[in-house]
Length: 323
Image (cartoon, rainbow, N blue to C red; front, side):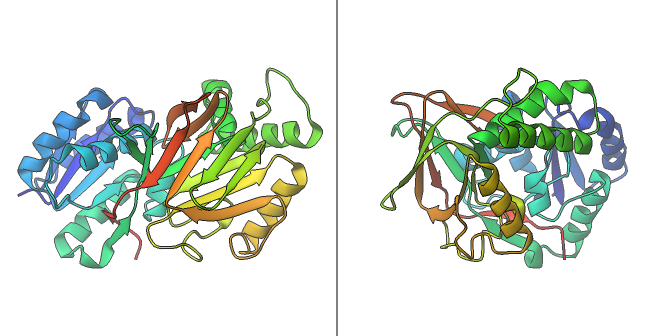
């Protein structure tokens, strides 16, 4: 039985330089079962094969889209029965939010070595439960897509702006993110509208079942099951167990500044902040005319009469690498 199964997507951006090192590492460790897919469409077949070797841990080596597709297949495919192995995510890709939440940062090979160490010594103290976001159009027959971090409104526009306008410049990821943030602030504070800047967010209506709704233009819309949101706010502090965590920041410079300062001083989600809405719920509906959201790297769009419906799944096991 392989101690670790590693699922790699060679087409993810981070793997263009990393994959030769990963292959060398796996060749030197006989207790790793390494499976490479040529596209995300092959992940279901990959998991069916991986299930036969009964690994103690499943490690995902790819970008956010690879992680999102793998989680969806694990949950819906039934390849591992009722006892899927805990999932670890290597710090690979553009954002790495899921990897960071699970304590994986820095060199992906060092993270893989840490996984191997835990698999040999014992995993029980490092297994954590996380619910997943289940995204659908609300129809009973539709197959939901699963993930852990959703961005909408101005945040989705900023992510798409960075992806289509900044990343093609070939700059380092960190500098690309700083440049995007500056462009967003320039557009928000001074109200400048230009083709080289992010667009103005479209109106959105966010409904929490049995808890009312929020409607308007928002610079940030976040739904997550991760332990920490953006801006330093902890989702665990005031969260009901098994609930989706929602944060919405109104489209104004003052509201965004208040959110930033509240996050820096640990007050976001603990104290009321004008223009900032933090809540939790079992079901969230997002409606708007051609309003985009991004779930772990994949784009979805709400339209007239076609809301995006978010629910949460039962807990799924993950491997946290930090002590």
